[in-house]
Length: 168
Image (cartoon, rainbow, N blue to C red; front, side, top):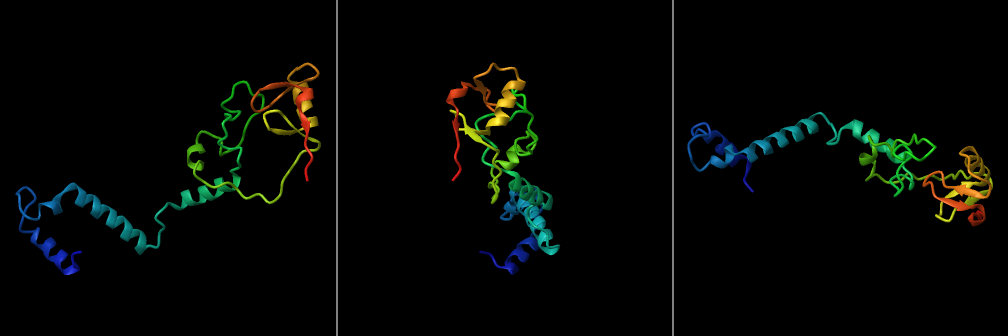
């Protein structure tokens, strides 16, 4: 590792050796050296003014997205905004195309309180919905009695295939 005084001597000798002639200090004129100086300038500027290395907007946005992110975000099923056959609309910022990639590497939110609909039932694909809300949805889209359609995946089953969920 070079000492500070030897670097100063080399920098001073660059005044005598122009960049267009080959000499022992040619590496100090290379593009990689300019990139290193630019990086050093930016790092020193941030330290001098006590600025974080990451933009504050990105830090705040990441915190907000992490608070909203749930395991259903980034699931194998496309969001309803991308699914033309879905009758529901998603307002989830995590599932939006604009913020999806940014939120992909963020941790899930820690929710300590669970909100479960009345009379929950589980469909054969493992998704849980409130029975009344599911039946109302199926009636609204015009399905015949005894047939259930998953609002998220659009899969269809007989009503006898759904099971009641008991929360313990």
